[in-house]
Length: 231
Image 1 (spheres, rainbow, N blue to C red):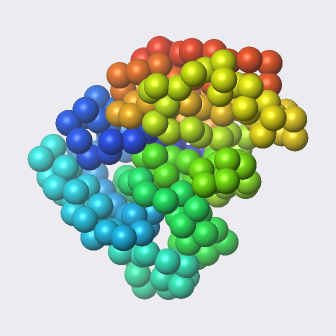
Image 2 (image 1 turned 90 degrees about the vertical axis):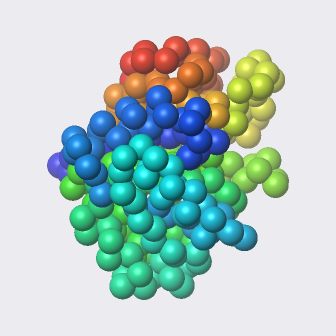
Image 3 (image 1 turned 180 degrees about the horizontal axis):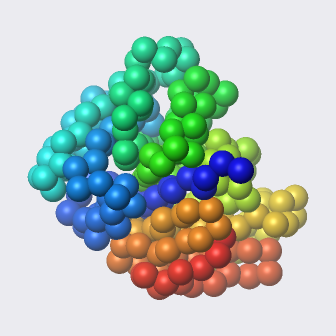
């Protein structure tokens, strides 16, 4: 059996001071004092260069060096020479943007296969907002309000970012109609900006500043920062 991948999920506002608490936990999962950090800004359709620059500058201010993989579309995601930096990457970070573009660019490509393989070899993967959304088995299409299949790095999970002002009862009612009637075993995590969780296998730890909301067909539960739960 392959080792479990460690994945960090954040609800948004990445590469800002407010994410320091969460990112410190994620960085610690690499077990490296000076991890090799790579930014994959594919989700930022219009300015991936700015997203990459922001990530590199952010980690530099934390005393870490980082670089980027400038894969911006599906064709580039099937060009292994463009992402050879993954070979010694300890932390791969996917910032936010447009989730459908990110998903369509990565699904069934050499890049997502390489990401999965390196994850099973110990590379930590982190995603914020759109970068977090695509990790699960189910992915919400914000423009349509529907749920489809995601990249599936985390089975039986869907992710709703930017969840800090959500009405939990209303969200659960919507999920019963759009997700749970067809996928009864799925759990959907609502995560706030600068907050989220780290998942290894079926073990989950809440990180950041705000609660994690776990929606299931039967209802929803709130988990506080540092609390551990099973996926």
